[in-house]
Length: 308
Image (tube, rainbow, N blue to C red; front, top):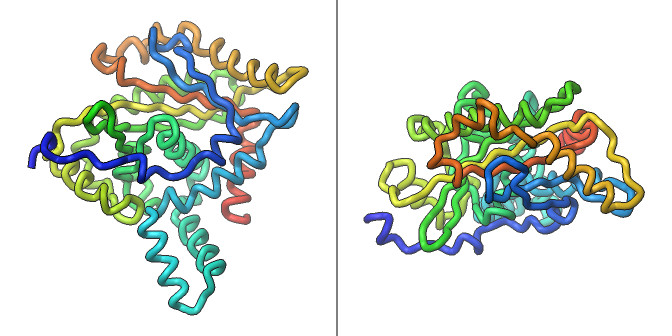
């Protein structure tokens, strides 16, 4: 069966609900001086009046863990299994959540924080659902580092588009976190794009995608789904190394966005960006996520996730 003859499935019906998480964030679209006439996403934790919504953001992010680890079908199967073992629905849901959280690598929660955020933002902003994922979340970390941080699928203009994502998290106090993160992300995502087909055996689709997507995942791995474009997405979560001043909510948010613009100004002429092939420029997408005291945020994420 050619990829042209395969009818497109409705991706929107398979997307997870992300509205509650997105409501705890603020976002703008801008070129950020990175690629002319192409908008990227600058996003941050939202404010309620002058109060940053850190706790609400973390709560909603953690509540997406189950949908990240398991598809709706797999969730329903597990819930039925847990209920059949003598639990009521509330107990089954608690066990499902604990089972999903147990899949996280305790040694790399900082990296998985950004991967989880990337997965949610791909679904919301790019209308793209998970298609393939690196080996089981707690498996050999050396193998996992070889693969892309996200491979999601969307349909656009009558054809499938794959979004291959790379997540970087920088919490150093050197003031160059965004520039360093973006340069690393660009280098790595281009390498992943060039080499990911050689490593497709490292990618799985069991548990976390719907049955409707399994045929597409199998065909992409086998090389028979060829009429498809691959676009690249880099998310950089970084410590801005400064407090955000402002007399109003909007002033604080504007300050965060202006920090992004200041740090990305002139970056496109750097070696890392100038080496992006011209044909890939229209396919490059950046998500920039500035955070105040990122180490503290990751510590709170870890504590809320694991209870430790």
